[in-house]
Amino acid sequence: MLVAAAVCPCPPLLVPEVAAGAAPEMDAARAACLDALGVLAAARPDRLVVAGPAEPEGRGPFPAGTRGSFHGFGVDVEVALGHGEAGERPLPPSLTVGAWLLTRAGWDAAPAEGLGVGEPLEPERCAAAGRALAAGTGRLALLVMGDGSACRSPGAPGSFDERAAAFDAEAARALGEADTAGLAALDAGLAEELKASGRSCWQLLGGAGAGAGLGGRLLFDQAPYGVGYLVASWS
Image (spheres, rainbow, N blue to C red):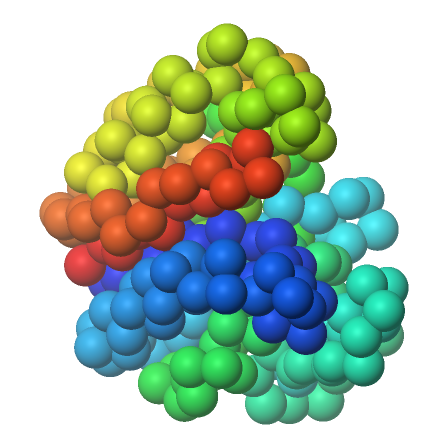
């Protein structure tokens, strides 16, 4: 049973060492993420699953204790996802950012594990994966990583697309209202065109939250660097 969820963006720029001189620009996003994690802890879950978009080599489950690093961004920062014996595969970038957030928050409310989700995954398969997670025993919390469109400005990674703002606005509304049907209705093809990495994980959350009766709150909605970053909490 899903008892709480936190939705956070996953740019490595959330990590101050990676952002370097631009670190203060992400202070509000970091603070919102920590607030969302506080809602997770207050729900007293039995387990936490951190779900984030991943390339093929980073998909599937990651046990507690799996490590990730930001060495590829030129900084000597390593993190572990909870406590345990690390598996053979390192965390994909999105789960590494999630593990960093949990470490920064001093997470100890429940054992944590990871799930790398393929962004091309069809909406119904995403929802089915969420339903399967929620059907397990115990009180489940989800930390859902993923970004909105990357096309909000001419300098954005995906260049400017006039459809991006409306896509992000609808995702923000659905996440802020815990509207599981609204999440299911997000257009997967459009999300891919807009380089919105959070679509699959948001729809996984929609599947997990269907019928759970949770309420939502939007904590952050901005597009620095032309990328939509959303933070929401469900409880």
